[in-house]
Image (cartoon, rainbow, N blue to C red):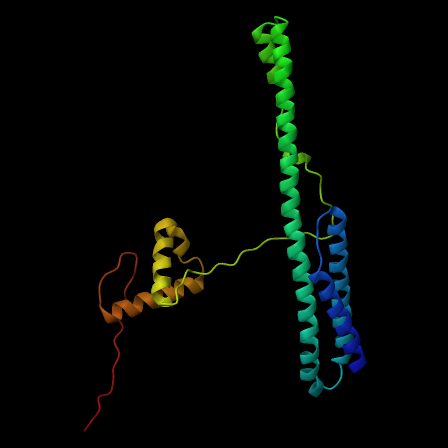
Length: 232
């Protein structure tokens, strides 16, 4: 088993070292990067398969196996994350370059149309005819003409958010952030799940029990209870 772990560790470390120095500047580089990602997935499948076999052994070994497997999978995740980020960076750069290419092509087409219009004017072609010809041949920026970057995998983007906070007082900062959100987009703070509704009710209960008052939209029910006094 030690030899197995050592062998996979070497392969994982080699992959991480390889993708650390990876540069994606062309479609071929992009495809090479994807091949590296495919290799990482193959290694991951092998790790899971081999460890599933080992995990069938007595349960007392499961903890040790988990500790051995975790850094291997973490190393692979690191490799995948590096490749994904570099592929995403290249995709953005490539789209920008293609957009600029199409914009230059559009400028060139408009320049040619201007020259053709001047030639027609010198030839005394009626103005309305020239305008009709230009309208029918008006060049457009067609972003659908950007060559597709073919690959076996797709990169998806997700976002994580966190309320603004300061070192001085995180609680105060969170409240200020919430006030900004409430002012800009009040619907974002509305409870949309049962858990959020329950949390809002608990917050209002705490406020009312500390300082009773009617709050629009809130049904308040008084509940009586007894509390034993200390007898001296």
